[in-house]
Image 1 (tube, rainbow, N blue to C red):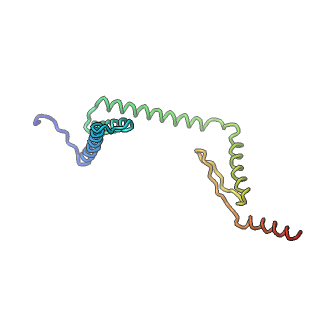
Image 2 (image 1 turned 90 degrees about the vertical axis):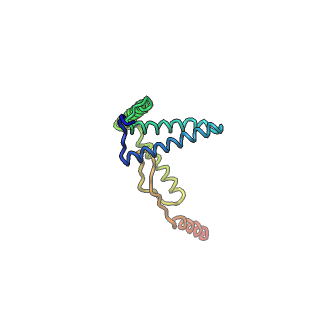
Image 3 (image 1 turned 180 degrees about the vertical axis):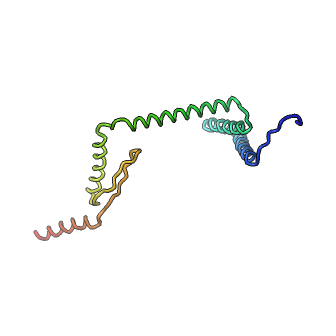
Length: 162
């Protein structure tokens, strides 16, 4: 080993490498034990090798080793990034396109349905209504404690007047 060039890692790199190796060894040991005991589930049979592969590629990068696994993982990530970029572009195009016919009326109908329901039960009114960018409805629900009481008094007093 005297003639070979050694890989020297700084303290941070060494700590990261050792942590990653410990995580990989744990996953390998767990896989070994479960296979030996016939306790490996289908779910874990997919998870553990993927986890081991991820740790291996992390160590490979740190040691400047280009393996086929590392190249495939990088290619997979590149394609995922491209797909995500395309999705964002399509969402932007959808958002910039002409308004959907009847959307304003549909949103008004939905808001008035909630408002009418709230008013029908004697709670007063709904304010600060908004629809979020993801289609959630947010509003402030107000109520009057004496509204129902006033109606009851009117009903009782009209009964006694007759």
